[in-house]
Image 1 (tube, rainbow, N blue to C red):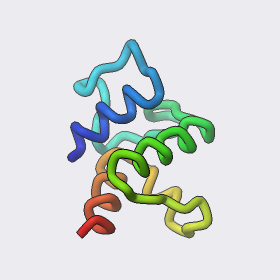
Image 2: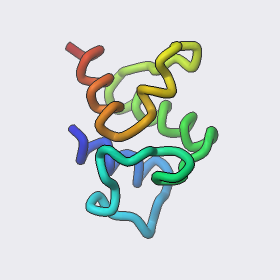
Image 3: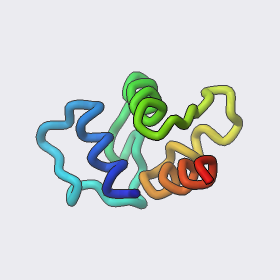
Length: 82
């Protein structure tokens, strides 16, 4: 699931110079980690909704935790899909 998400991030955000191996599952997705911004979050949220049929509501109090890393994102998606 984590590698699938890494590829989804690369594809959805057109990160041409980054490979799956370049993304650490536990690194931050925003700021000092992968360096994503709020527009990237929206695009990624749409891609996740399309691929996994999982909506991550921006009003969710845990949204920052959910998007904190690839591993947190994978854990959330798996928990709501079951």
